[in-house]
Amino acid sequence: MKKKEPISNIMTRDVITLTLNDSLFDAERLFKKNHIRHIPVVENDKIIGMLSLTDLLRISFVDSYNDVDVPPIDTAIYNMLSIGQIMVNSPEKVTSSSTIKEVAALLALKEFHALPVVDDERLVGIITTTDLLNYLVDLY
Image (cartoon, rainbow, N blue to C red; front, side):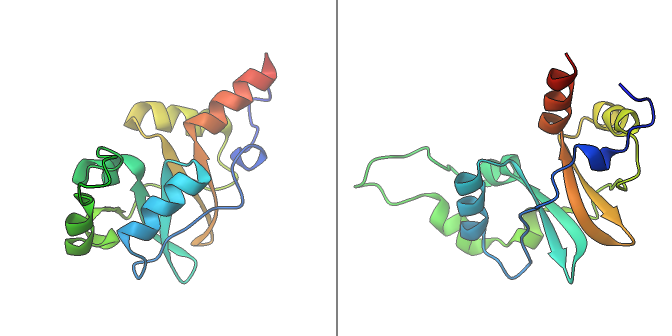
């Protein structure tokens, strides 16, 4: 393992994003379709927030009811709230030149599971604990 290896070597570059104009229904679809747990919220390529699947689960009963005769409980909640109301505002960020060690230490210290990667105020990627674990698996 290179001690100064940049996070750009293992980050996800094709980032799925949301905007404040998207709905919570849109967010839920993206989480399910792409099997992801974190989505940056952007405005003009600048990150303004981070939405996690956990944030969505806290306010809803996603997949709790499978009975077709029972109306979806999350529909009313999703219609009452917006992405801007439940996302984490101004999330902590790292740059693509941050080292893997620095980012791993930050994720551990802050107990985060994902961080947006930002260069010159523009979202260029996302790094997750899964990315770090896959990196370690590849090393060993």
